[in-house]
Length: 220
Image 1 (tube, rainbow, N blue to C red):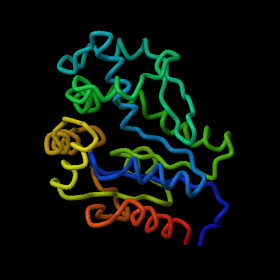
Image 2 (image 1 turned 180 degrees about the vertical axis):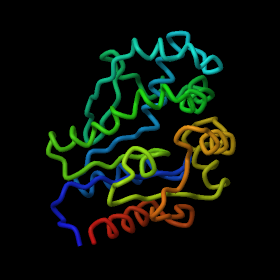
Image 3 (image 1 turned 90 degrees about the horizontal axis):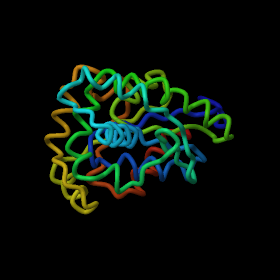
Image 4 (image 1 turned 30 degrees about the vertical axis):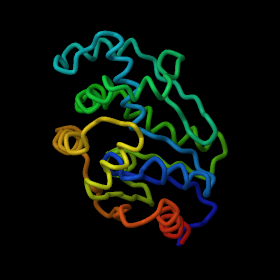
């Protein structure tokens, strides 16, 4: 059994609208962790790339634009937000219909993922520097690519009807099925359940029940 005071790295993976963000934020509050939403990283880069005129259909043009984008971090409460050239875009900007339609396309470009790889890995040290008890990072390749050796790895899932209803309640218009297909079929860091990760179906449970279940597993 690991020391309960040991710095924890928790990988939280799953598709769209399975409850990754709500669960991760709840666990961050309960366990004293720094929370990182890597989905917002790809949305933020997509927003910046679109603003610079980049086209996901012409991936050979993207690295040159990426070289002009300087990554930084701003901590808001327990969440670490990605900044681009000193600015953190508003939530409404990175969740616009245009970003929704392009984020999976840009996320499939190896140069985009490489731009974020070292940055995302470095956030564990940032969490240590800020005296958090650990880091909880959510996304689609955390337990498989970013932190494959994390002691605590979870994969959340739910049926499509439940996820679509959640997405609609959030006011989002992207297609769950289309996002799943693009994320799971890309060649670089596809959405998968990492080997050895604990799978949890969030559909039949309340948010508090899911948080309680995961917190119990982590604290064992």
